[in-house]
Amino acid sequence: MKRQKIGPLFYVYLFISAFLVFVPAFAYADGFQYEKEARILNDLGLYRGISEGEFNPDLGAALNRETGIVMLIRIFGLETEAANITNADEILSKFSDAGEISGWAEGAVAYAVHSGLVIGLPDGTFGAKQPLNGKAYCSLILRQLGYTPDYNQAPAELAAKGGISPEEVQSFTNKDLIKDDLVGISYGCLKANDIEGKSVLESLVALGVVDNSGVETIMANLPDLRSALAGPALTPSVPPAPTGSSSHSGHPDDRKKPVASLTQRQDNVIVVCFDESVVSSTNRNGAKNLSNYKILGVNGNFVENAASISESVPNLEFEVSFDSLTKGNYGEFTVCITGISDQSGNIMDDYQQKLSIIPFSIKTIQ
Image (cartoon, rainbow, N blue to C red; front, side, top):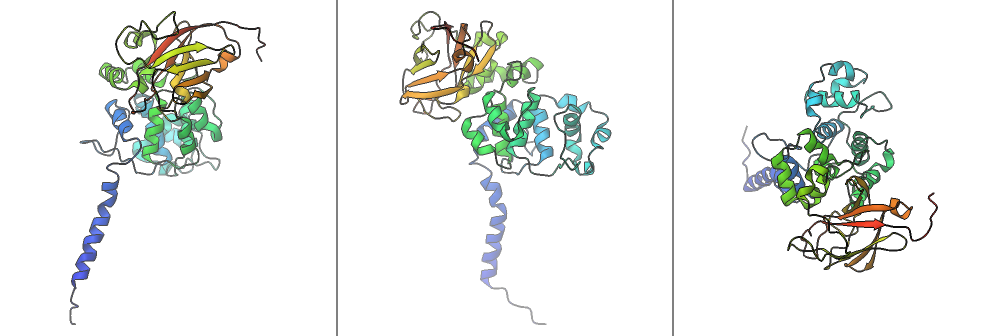
């Protein structure tokens, strides 16, 4: 039989086909929203990619339920406890599809089931390979923080605890996650407060999961996480709070002073006037992101994040309300402002100011 001659077009096709096979690798190399956060989590020992020898976060990969649980266990520093589970097969036998759970995920899944984080699906299966959506992952985080979440509102509830921004809520609520999304939620989770008012990052430091060098890196270079380390043992590393005047005059150093004034209105709304124009948005570093404003009690304990923010002077003055204050909780508080960018995109210094909330009128607390 006569062999058919192969023309030059065939080699062009072969070259293009070979190139297309490698396109995903190049596409995943950059362009994801949370590449920086993935590197930070990796450096802190809280995230691993797909390579032992080099940093390869695999941010474009689709997520399933078992992978999400492994990440959850790691981000909360529970890997040792999960590794100590000796009866994983027995725990997982309640699921009719237990055999589909990957061996590398069995310990983490068994721990999550045993501790009540995971119940399973209504049909009696676990669904290890089913897509993981934003509602499910945020629900897992909230349960670990000690809350009882509403599954359909879980992203919004996590935002209220200081975890993710309102814009991220919209992005994650009805989405099957990829690893890039998982990194974004997990990174934000470090700033979220548990039912006792302690941030996840603060707990990780207390447990020794994040070591001292990691803490020093955070305090020096990561303003958006620095506020999550405002516990009593770490307060010397945070700029001291000015007292007395509502102005920043008398600030103890010569760094950029982000706040020109912070005053109390008669309805106990806090009016914050910045010293220069800031990014006015609800995203992570925006001046209308609720989690960028918090109040601490007299002992430095976390009280709450802002409940609402309105812009009275574009990019300069904002009216910030806190639920407990507007409902009539009076006394000494510290207002903390963190992680806000100026118009050039630079993160401004953290700011704290003590404030005496006094009653202007008698109020009825509902």
